[in-house]
Image (cartoon, rainbow, N blue to C red; front, top):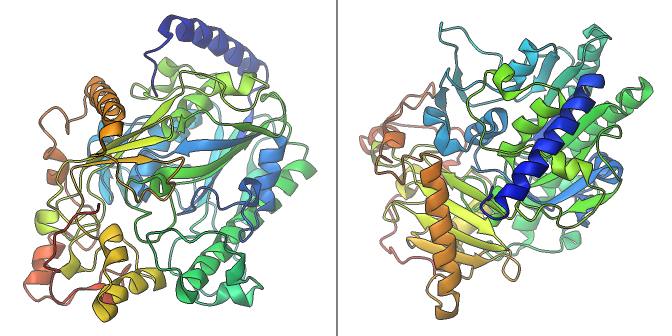
Length: 532
């Protein structure tokens, strides 16, 4: 977050709110329900006005509390995004944990572990932190999101959806939690991660005509719209379990003193979204309610919120000081200021930006290199710095563009170039990019009109560049301190091992598992024309 303006005022307010929050927590520490979907994009909820994704559970939380309109993950990939949530630090501050499929450094404790050590009962179901390996200094596996509850199963509404009875497993957790102890539970759905049952959206009564907007970086056709509807079915499955969980809490008279947080780790698993660094990639749905601790109902907050603000929020409402948490220094800031206001719109003028970025996600480039990016979003402007613009941003073509999950939309983008000689969408989704990108998110939410070389935007670009680099230096980011190659040297912790690119070039028959066989290019495209 940006705290250069009104710093003295911010410190005074922070001390006051910290004291207030500690007083509330000490007298009645709340339970905490953290519900996180896997690959769910901002805006795809009926609370945001979406007609083709129905989310009564999410809407209920927003109606009882706060709906956030500018919440972001610092890194739009599963493992690094969840690492930011757990630690309250940006991914470039987490060494190996900046990468996907990593060894999580033992030095970085997460809030779930800290709350467990400070009197909270903890549990989880579904997906926690990952993929990767997390062990403590003695080599023991860490409970990053608490003990697992996964015995209950239920028939899913589509073939591709997990049979995990998330709500039933939460009920098992509640049944064994001592009534005198506060608890925190991590509900981590594996939906709407791919793959999908094609046509499941229409089978459930959805219509492709209900989709208000197909992003400009995909073809707008029946196949793509069906793919979007199938994704919607999986979002609604996540939400259906949330409804059951909320009903159970209400039946047990626990909802009033439970901080409920509902969100997603990053954007949808479609080209140019998941794994990239545009607004659709990093902006996520977020709603919170806590009747005993959040003022007002049905508020819509426009402040810029980062995932790194969650860990300090959870510690504060639990009455646990940073020292007692034994966590590494937190970069994020508690949301007490937002909780204690009864206003909508802009609450704290200092919450005026977020930082985003990425290093190595899925492999598939020579030497298993990543695609390093840093960016800043402020005042509806997104500035992106691509540090290695000669690399392929979504992974090399000959290895299937591995940083983009396989699916009908990806195939449509690739086939448009291969079969119809139309490379418009391919360039936006998979083609090389310039070193700098600048977008006006308000007028161009799809981020397809690069303004970085437009004369009238040079002052904005320079301001954002200066602030981005200054903040990254303050956070000791190796990428801007001359040691960025360290992220490429960290070991890839996948069971499949390293050197995917070289093994493919050597003729080994490889199946990445999350891409289709047709995604692999027989020859790398010769054009290196960058996005405009």
